[in-house]
Image 1: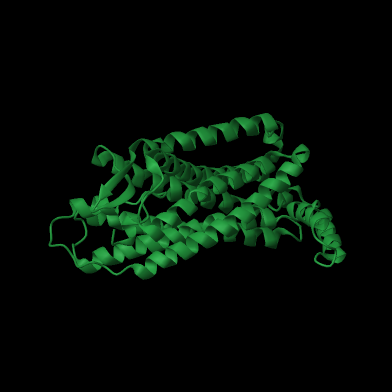
Image 2: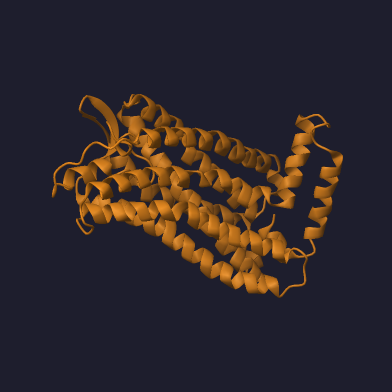
Length: 354
């Protein structure tokens, strides 16, 4: 397979290059594009995402498991967000191997399993970010009315619903993923029975993966920020910066890829003028923006966990047991404890900065 889009088999969101190539026959075939740079760019970035994402999210899981007896609803969401990101990046080594050698060697079941697990990890990660946003909104804006409902039992039910929803949304990826042979190359492709399932994947990725989460963040945080600014707490400016960072980072990492996919869909439907330049640019932009979007799972531990004083205090406690004192100064540890005590001055800010 000469083109990078056809090398990346089925990722989440699913690659449609072979589908578009087959239906876009209104003009003569374009010359083969040289996307070797994109190929090795993706391989390098996927490798970094796998290493950094595994370390960061595994550390979150380990710390929360170690302090499981102190877990609250926020911790439960954070724990499952880290699990979602780990599930998401679990398949990256298989993708990297496939892109390097150009053949799918893991069989049909692994093709289906990895496709479904990758997509389930993607949607569950998005959904848990939405749940954490809504939980912050409810706690800050309606603190007295919902306190009795924020129990671990409620959290377990909510987590179960999110995982089940993510799995059912991703089920077509398992059903329609198949190993096929094209030009003596074996690949794992999303091959649905009709065009409707192609549109389904694009729709749920754009709407549930970008539009809905972005709307929830904008609506909730636009109400939270004025409330925070009206409070007399030294933490409010830091919290507002964190909130804005969450929204901006999410949009910058995922919007370009979703826009590229949507433009590719318009191109396949002849709603954009057909040209070799457009075809090459769309393939290049989809490949590059997809790889960049995947790096978001490396940032989730930083955005949602490591900025919190409570979590960092736990990490420092853990590292003090693992590492020599020369690597972790006692002054840093005491500073973390003081910051944590100071954060208790506001239950609202501590809801956002753990």
